[in-house]
Length: 123
Image (cartoon, rainbow, N blue to C red):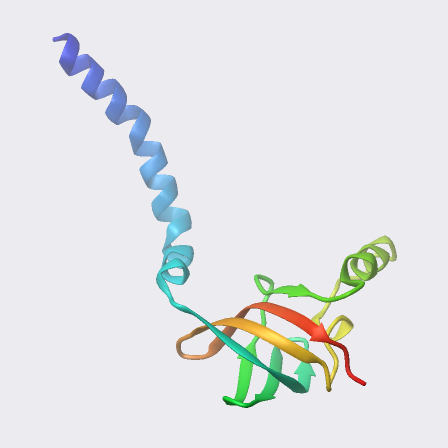
């Protein structure tokens, strides 16, 4: 009887965790199993929702969303300035045509940029 109560208590504690994992893991779970690819090159076009890069391996167009992380010199300072002014940040605040970048992306229906790192600013 004590075992049965212990099993029921453990099951009752585990069910909310399983339900939460199913709710949050649906979209995230798919991304975590996708292979992350890398591209390096020069930015040829930049918009708030896309980035075009030309490199030795080819030409790529990446989709950008709120989950995309951008790393660039001075980006933290600029983000804080914009936030203090009540403005939101966008890709064009940090990445410019001519910048050298490394992009980590997931390849699917579109190439989703997970991380963009500006390795050298435009000259």
